[in-house]
Length: 189
Image 1: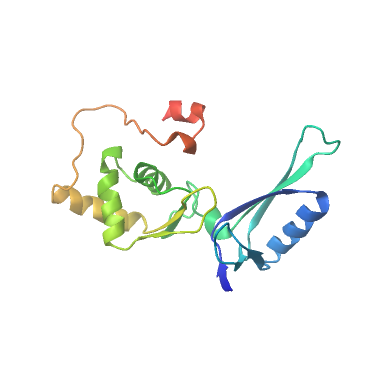
Image 2 (image 1 turned 30 degrees about the vertical axis):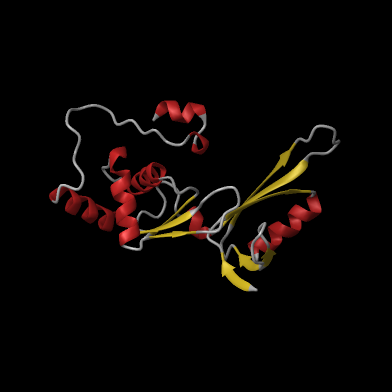
């Protein structure tokens, strides 16, 4: 059985006792045995300093609500927008090129346009700066690089004509995959 520390998030629904037990194990950095459909069993941990969020979910037909736990590894928590701007790893929940460029640019405050997404993907692939992660219901990826690295790539690509700054003034319109954002968020981009 493989043993890994997953830079990820887990979401569980259960009763008070089950959620309490998993919460305690996550906080202690314990190992869990996980088997994804069609996959090899692995022993996994969210690592030390994982964050947990608990809530309740009303279930029609049940007298008591089910309990919901979301656990996030410390590494994943640092990849949110505005967090750990010096970090050199970004974990994304999807591998769509436009989404990836948008999220990396948002995290590091990079001056980019959506039309650069194919170029950005080629750069990530050629520099071996992207790696797929295991996911259930998504295609997560790990992107290696930081703001100075990405700015250097952008500068070099502009100099060699691989990407161009759009002419004219105005706002930039991002057309992100619908499943990544709610309707109200899509309208404000």
